[in-house]
Length: 147
Image (tube, rainbow, N blue to C red; front, side, top):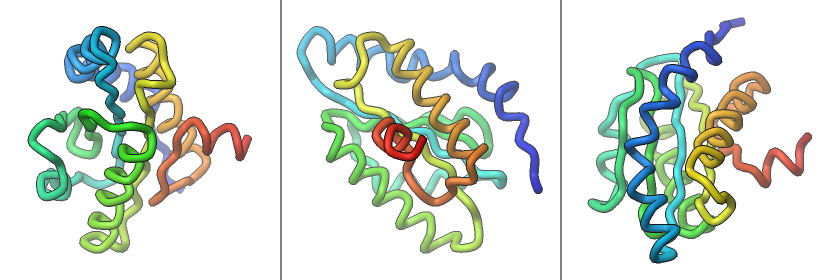
């Protein structure tokens, strides 16, 4: 069984997400422009082209590591953000059917601060990896239903 130095790795990458979601969270608080965010992690390097063909110009993708990406889906509700993540997962599975992909997802409407949002996003990803929840989207609702 593979071990993931996930806590060490994510502690360094946690801060990199600040610049990615900072402007989006400001717009959310000031103008109620909702957004959602997801982390995509694989044991193997992830080819960014998986995301490029699906993301809109207003969405932002940040490569944190060769096998870890953070994506902000601009102007999305919980439902539309989840749909975008599921579309990426479907494309990834079609291209890399033997590789495992771990995904966490959050929506800004569920959080008061960007720090809480990022913390929950990384916690959910840790949960997905530790519980072997590959190739499925783990969000706060999933966690509440299954813990």
